[in-house]
Length: 178
Image (tube, rainbow, N blue to C red; front, top):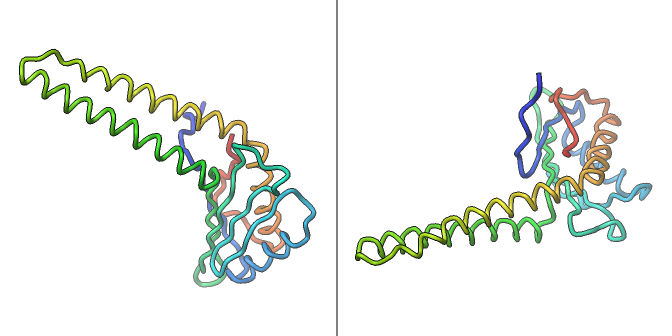
């Protein structure tokens, strides 16, 4: 049975760790401080951000955001979210907003034109907006594909940290984004 295509823009997964949250984050910091791979990042009180070292960064380079919460009665849950860097993500959000605005305004203006007995030339903005949204989505998918090797590397770092804690996986369908 084939699986439906993954249309998520920012893939995420959850892991269960037997370590307490502060221990998981300490192990992430230790792993980053080793400097043995092309992954760097910052660790915060309840989260961490992993990204590629500056020499490896290209336009589509991803980053992985970790959020660690206590899991009762013991251990922790690690939530991971893979996505583009904030500047790239903002560009895509702005593109979606722009094309949506153009489409809605064109439909409103076109309806107004038709209501006044004029030709509805403004309706042409709707197909333009749909094409713009589709192109933006296509570029996002292309970027995700181009960043798949780096995404897999970021996921490997998280898996190494979790295995150092001797933590079993909670989510059995953990996959690296493609």
